[in-house]
Amino acid sequence: MIRGIRGATTVTENREDEIIEATEILLKEIIEQNKIEANMVASIFISVTEDITAAFPAKAIRLINGWTFVPVMCMREIPVPSGLPKCIRVMLHVNTMVPQEEINHIYLGNAITLRPDLKVENRSL
Image (cartoon, rainbow, N blue to C red):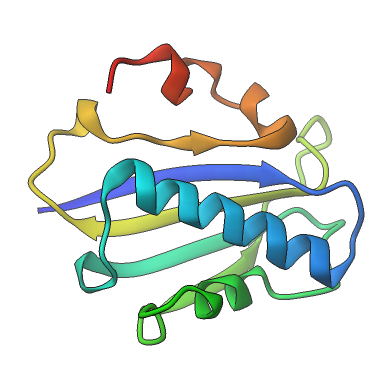
């Protein structure tokens, strides 16, 4: 079965180093909280808001040992006027038998305002 695992984070500035670092931290947290191995992942979609242009956040996945061959695609988020600025969102498509209610979606930085109901601290692990 394939499950979607979501996450999001924000950056304070449109700088390559900050974009890559924030994305790497987010991905590592998703991987750790959900006990994911690279061979379990079908693909990863990463979207960014219009104010993030300094780097492809997908570059961060290549910094994680053993994740070289995981397919990753970057795209632009819909520019909704009330949307959260400088936001990076990810969707991992993972082969797992873990029930949907036990998936840990991770929201960091200002992105915790997007789905406070899904914060790991609010759920029993």
